[in-house]
Each structure stands twice: as C-alpha cells, then as structure tokens.
Length: 585
Image (cartoon, rainbow, N blue to C red; front, side, top):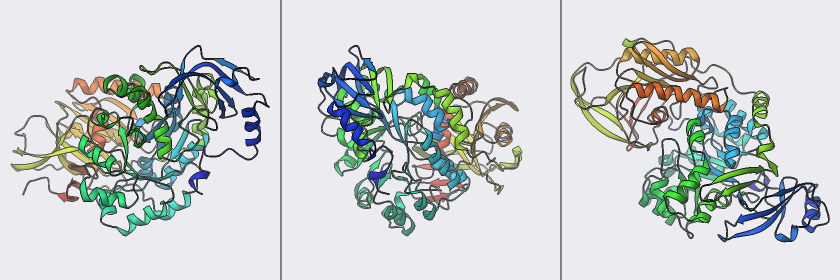
C-alpha cells in the first residue's frame, strides 16, 4: 500500500460525487460555519469567510457559501478558525494513558492528529503491543498514525528487552492504513556505518516516511545519515546543530515535552522562510502537564508569546508544515477537500480554544468519556504481567565498598542528554554533594544481576524512587540514598506489575500502577493526574529538585542519547557506544 492509500488520504468514489454536488451548491450541506475569521496558514492573512462541510470533509471555503442550504448552521460570532493541530512525533505510552484516554485529554485541546511511535510497548511485548496500537488507531476519532518501530531494542546487545520486532514482522504490518512509515531510526551509527540489518529496514520502508533520531549529529556523519534517506530529527538540542540540519534539508521537529524542552533554543531558527521545514512535537508529555499547560496548543502559545514567532508561522508549524512533511494531503489546511478538522478560537495569541471539530463533528458534543471506556475494551489491550523479576534484598545490589574514583551520570535539567563526570567514593560517602545510588534491574525473567551506577542532580536526600518505565527496554530503574529503600521501592514495582513508587524509611509513600506492559494505566486521565500529584507531593518532601524525576529517570537508561547511560547490563559511554566500568581505571 502506498502513502496515497493511508488513512485520511482519499475520498471514496462512492462519496466524491455527493461532495462535489455540495461544493457546486447543488446539494444541501451537512454543516455551514458562518461569521468566522480564517487564519490562513499559507498567506498569513486573517479574513472573514464561511466554511461548508459535507460528511467529514470541507467542500468549500468562501463567503459565496453564506446563503447555502444546510442541515445545520454554526454562527462563529467573529471567532477565529485554524486547521487542527498535528503532533509530529510522540510516544503515547509516556502519557501513561491508553490511546483512547490520550484522545480524550488532547482532542479538546486541538490535537486532531498524532503521529506516534509505540516502541515502548513494542520493546516489552513485541508485535503484540504494536498491533494493539493499530487496533486503537482503527477506533479513535483522532487521526492516530502509528510509525513502524525501527529499533527494538534501541541498541542490540546493550540491554535486555522483552521481545524483538523483526523486519519480517514489520513488513507484514506495513500496509496497515495507519502506518505512515518507519519510526525514529535511533541507531544512527548503524545507518552511518552501513549496518546491513539497519539498511534493510530503511530499504523496506523507503517508499514511505523515514523518521530520524540524531542528537548532536553534525558534519560528515550527518551527511551520511541524510544520504540514507532519513527525513527529520526531533532530538536537536543546540541552535547551531538545528541550523545545520535545516541547511542540509532535514525536517526540524521542535520538541517541548515534560523533560526535553528545546523550544526556547530552536525558536530563533523559525521564520517565514524556514517554517515549511519546521514542525512541532511533544515526544514525551505526561497527564499532569497536559492538564496544567496543554499539548500542541501550549507549544503554539509559547512560540507566539515568549519566543517572538509570528502568529501565522506558529500555527503553520502545528498544521500545514507537519501535514506537508508527512505527505498528508487532506490534512493541515482549512481548504476544499481537506478533512474538517478545525480549531475554533476566541483569541489566536493566547490560543484560547472555544471548540474543536474532528471530521466535521464538534468535540464538545461527543461523549469521549464513554467512548474511551468502550473502545479500550474493544481494542483488547495486552494485559499479561510483564514484570517477572524475583523480589530483591538490599544486599542484592552489590555496590563497591572500596575507595576510589567512580564514573557518575550527571542529569542536565530539561534535557535528556547527560554529562559524564567522576567523583571519589570511599565505600560509604561521596566527595560531591547530591550523588546517589542508581540501578537498572532486568525484569523479563532472567533475574540477572542489576546494572549499577551513580547519578548526580536529582536532589533526593532520603528514600528511593523506582519505575518500570526506563527507555526503551523498560527494565526497572531505581535511584536512592540507600539500598534498603531501593529494595522496598523495587519490590513494590514487582508486586503491582509495573508503575511508579516513592519509598522512604522502609515504607511505600506513593505509587501509580501501570498494569499494561508496566507502561500504561487503565484509569482515566484525571485519575492518573491525581496519582502523579500524589507522587509529586511525596518526592518533594524527600528533597527532589526535578519537576519530572520519573520521566528524567526513564531517559537515564536510553543508550542512544549521550553522554553516559545505565542499562541493565551496565554503564554505556554513548559517545563511543561502549560499556565502561563503574570504577575509573
């Protein structure tokens, strides 16, 4: 199946004659929106118009439709209208919500299209988890596109994951209408150095989109990565890096998640000229921030009000630029033939949303709560217990007792890159402040010894935090001031089949259960948000200085993001893609 046959791309031959009749004025419209001001994301103009809708599509735009016969008229009363917002790259699993709760939380915020990579659940459950996301995409009103997870595991040989996702399995699912292409190719060394297995994946999906993942990649290495056909990158962290990627034709996906926040750094690159090559994504954003800040609507508001980006350019990045980049010819504009995914706003600069339309239906008139519960059941989520680790004792961690110089991961706030530093440890105390014990514990039934590390920058002064979300293989990550509380936290994760835990002085103080693959909750967005608020209350009592320590912890395990990371197999120097010892030699 070609890109032309994917979801949203076609009007059927049965439907098209009716839509043409409505466009000509020979047939009654389904919906007519009048007294509305269109923000034209192509020209940047704002002008009064009418929007004629038939079925799920816009059949006409212009004041010439003002007197058309219609089943329903909506008077916009001078409000503004823009295309629906598109998130160019995200992992729904990081929201801890099912795709249906994610839809319920983000669709009213204007996110009518989400382009996701479910490699989190695929690393845990293999094709079973990926196919669940495809079933979800068939049930959501939100346009949910599911990119083919390209790196499961993220870096073969460097971590233990729950299941492989082979090229044969990928190719069998390629023709699904929700698959737009290959998801983020994190193994950029494999691409650059012509690894046969990696290039086979690129070749198999070369007729679709090829998403990239190349933090800090510059010069000849970047040239080689692009030569292979990679189209974009959402991992850009410096201004000059972003400029070079744009200069070399790479799509710049500007990210603002719950931890990785690159909007401020990259916004100066955005202007009228560059905007067709720039788009927006959230990558990893949790229900707390979605509820308190927003989703793509928040990124638009920040670009306009804090980073000096023109209004029409900010909205262009969230709509037409993204649709054009991914070849979604019927999305991203308020224009004839486009899907009637619209955002109606009281004010453009503050992104004050009055209502949203998805496929010509007002979201405010849809019972998303009931649909979420029903669709979750219909989708048959993978509910097997994926936490197969035996309970741990404090002595099982086995930290060194001899004095010496040790390697330490230093957290960079609001970034998923880390620093590689060293510190002296005498077997009990560290020479530097705020250095903690850290372990990555294999959870797939092999009961291997934990990978051990030290980490600086969390601020924890007592107790421990543990999580079954540790990108991308999702073993159990735990950070603590002592091994007794670390064991308590880990054992609670094992007992509840996955989630987040705060423990102190031998007791569990707060927890959030994630029974679907140890990644996703069965609860509503509001309930998840409440659980996160409880976690925040408890970990702040223990001195944590990070706003989102669990998300930050999750990325400390990812061995494709510089500079130093910890997998269940040990410390990985990501600048050289080599294991190193905890002790400096």
